[in-house]
Length: 159
Image 1 (spheres, rainbow, N blue to C red):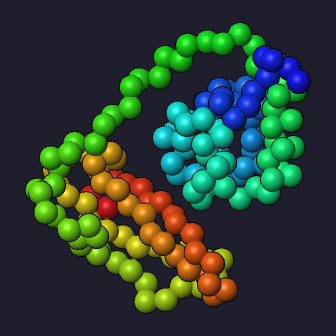
Image 2: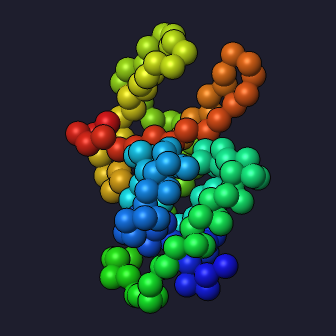
């Protein structure tokens, strides 16, 4: 094993900035590179991303192959990222006691179809920073009973 290779403790940003490693990640974890949360995920360690949540879809054998493939690459010399610090949510954005799930629904289709987009539009507060002060996620259940948590995102224009 190459001691200069990539592994579970490598930030996703380092992998995506390396041409060969990026190709491996795109093939093994397309949901990560196509995620609307990619900017936030770039700061996370790959092992954390693959261990839990919506991106934990690889079998043990697939994960072993991923780690083996990434470890074989030369990661080069470690470098210090110049990423700006993360913006922390404002804990005072909403008054104390504001119930979770209290956003106003702007539009929501009555039903959805398998493999089709279903879009729920919610109004965001007119104060604070909707990119970091608002948390949006939903639990969806498939006809077979399996469930998954999906993240939402601020689309601009108060939606």
